[in-house]
Length: 116
Image (cartoon, rainbow, N blue to C red; front, side):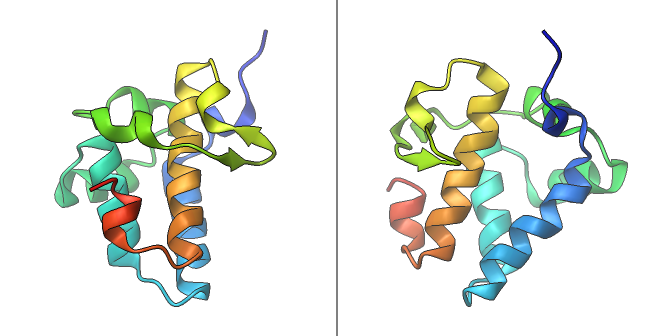
């Protein structure tokens, strides 16, 4: 079975789309970065370095310093699929991020988004 196209896309190509989605709803790039750091364990400098290297989205998640254990609390539907029912590990991580950015764009507070 071949990999989904999103796996090989550069994280640097996807990142501006996430930022644009948030900014259209009055949120900020800093909030997007905070969500990504919370989810993946990258520091801000590490995140920026990964974007600069233009690594693949799959590699970005596979090399994450420390995936947040609280990410399992992320529930809901993204692209018509329940996040908690996704079995493929990398796709689940990608959809976790999508769901968090959706919540940001819908106006949820950062405390709720970051499962505090």
